[in-house]
Every structure is written in C-alpha cells, then in structure tokens.
Image (tube, rainbow over all chains, first blue to last red; front, top):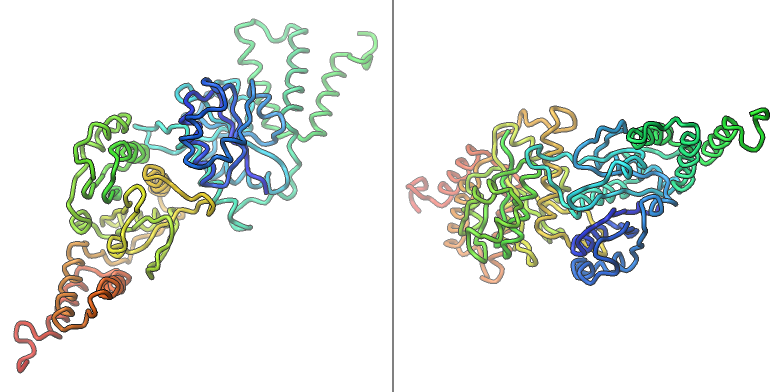
Length: 247
Length: 247
C-alpha cells in the first residue's frame, strides 16, 4: 500500500517544511507536495530542519496551484483548526487515517491538504476536498503548528496502516474515486455552462454558489465513469454536439 | 478528573520546554514538572517558545530528582524510543492514556516521564515506572523530539478523557496505587536491609539487582496498605523492634 500525499498549501517558512518532512519520515510518509512555497524551493533551511529526512525533502514536488497538486489524487482531505461553514463531513484524524487506508489499500491514491502557517486553507481549497479533518484540542488553546498537525496525521496513519484487518475499514466494494483532475474538469465544465446561462449571478455570490455546487458533487464520491456520465449530462442539457437539435 | 503530570527529566533547551508547554496546553494538560533543567528555571526562551501557554510555563515546578518529582503520584509511565532490556509492560500511547484515565477518573494521580533530548531516560528512572510507553514510528527513522512525544501523549489523553464510558477502561474495582514516595521508601528500606545482609553483591551487579527488585514490586501495583504490610514484613524478617527476639 502506498502512503497518502501531504500537500502543503502556500507554506511560509522553510524550517516548517523541514519539520513536516521529519514528521513524515517518522511515520513512513514520503510524498510531499508544495503549492507555491513562499520562500522558494529547494530550501536549505528546510533541509537542515528535516534532521536527516533528506529523502522526503529531496523528493518534494512543487506546484503552482492546489488543483495541479491534487490532479492525480482520489480521496482528498482538508485539515482545519475549526470546522468551516461548509457542509462537508467533519472527521477526526483517526477516521481520516481509516478512510485513506481503505482507499489506498484498494490501490487508489489520496492526500491531505494543510494550509499556510497562520492563514490555513482558503475556502476554495477546502471545497476541493471530500471531508474536513479537525484536531480535537483544548478549545481555549487550540493552535497546532504545521508540523504538529502533520505529525498527528502521520501518527494515526502509521497506526492504521500497521493494522491488518482489525478496526480498519475494508475498501472492498467501493468504487474507485475519479482523479481530482477529472473532477475539476467536470466542475469547470458545469460552471462555464452555468455562467453562460447567467445562473451564477450576481457576481459577489458566485464563489459561494460554486463552492456549494462542487460540494454536492464531491459528496457523491464520483467514480471515473460517473464523472463521464455527468459530463455527458451537461453536454446533453446544454445542447452541445447537437444532442438537443432545435436549440 | 485531573490531568496527568508531565515530568521532563534533565531537559536541556528552554525552547523545548516551551514547546512542551504549548503541546500540553493544546490538550488540556497543565501540571509540568522539571527535574534538574540544565539551563535553569525560570527560562525566558521557554516562555517565548510556549506561544502563549504561559500558565503552563508559570505553573511548572522544579525538582532535584525523579523520586522527588513523582513522590505524590500513583501511576507513573516512562516514555522511551526503544523498549529497554527491562521486564516491564510496553504499551502504546493510546493504552497509556487509557490506563491514566482509569486511574485519574478514580481520583488517583499519575504522570509520565520524558527523558532528556538525546539521552532519554536512564534505567534507574525507567525502573520507577509501572510501564514503558513507546511510540509506533518508522523503524528506519524513529526520532521524535521531546515536544512531539508530549504532543502524541497529550493527543491520546485528550481523546480518551473526552470519552465518557465508551472504550475507556473503568477504574472501578481497582485499589488505589500507593504514592511513589511511599513506594520508594519501601524500596530503600528493603535495599538497605539487603545491603546490610550482604545480598546486593558484588557492587557492580548491585544496580541491576536493585532495578529487578524494584520492578517486581512495581508490577504488583501496590496499594498504601500493601506497602505498609511489606514494610512490616521486612522489619519482621530483619528482627527490627525486637520482633525476632534472640537475634
């Protein structure tokens, strides 16, 4: 079974990236993805802070955007300190590890998004995830730093991946999730058509409407075939390719 | 229910103590005990690294030795990266949290020992604990730093303490553990008598023999009454107070 990707969105300090790499190495994670690291990449401060987890630092890949970073992934989870006003399932790290293990054991891919040091993930990034992971902490003092959050996820992952059977969910019988790139193309197809139809209006409400729509489709945990079906549906409804002659 | 004490033995960097305080605050722990902190106490670097968890830093208490630091505690667990050649139960952080919760829920006290940054706990410190806690990590890269270790314990504790009933063990029916100060007095009493009898010989084997004896008594999870009973047994056997006239 492969391990899930750790996706750091707009990380600021190289030191924090290095400490994330170290925490990943502690728990057998090695696929580190960086979206627009503020101070550039590669980073000597990251390497120094990794305390020897060089293979994680050296293997890190850099992307310009979240959609690019998760294009090949199936199940994607987003970590936040507090649940957002987004209607997505909110799960604990232990359940995140369970869900990822079930998917990855079935040969699929998956990853977890972590936001920037203070700002966290923005709503559009969270909107691309199947579920939100929150960390149960003291409500009066809930700040976990980036490496601590990755550490807790890694800890749960390692504990889960080490179990054969047991309390782990079985992935058997689940349909493979579509890769995020295909899902995002579906989103954009739908949104372009809705823009053309004047539905996503007024402009200031468009972002919320888009997120809500994406969320509905994400909750469905679509397979490749289902994504293709829905794209056919959109084409059919909008009369593309002459499927609705007369329009 | 109170929370377990976090006992740092010979911690070196104030920064690490501060990060421990922060991790404690994240998970509702506040009883920080320092045994012989290398750079003294109070520490401004600790305070800065605590990122606002001032009440933990300010409330920290300093001790000259491990026996003093755990004198009032019942259940004491020792964290190590690797299991030692000591015949004690070796448990995971989740079981550590369960055991502590069961004891503390019953009104007892407990704590966890963490060693110095690189050296860890020495065998005599470990010998004072009921059980050893190890962290499941990648065997090829298993170094967790002090604050990370405390973070994982705190995380499991917080998750466990938040459960009412559920998978948590019940403390009902258990006898309260004797406080470590009373247990250590029993150890010292026994060892003094054995020294006098020439049993703990040769000198180079004495430390191992002492640890093995202490371990046997620790495994028994003695109550106050049992400690008093055993002290009476030792006195009786050695003829103190004229209980064995003629000797």
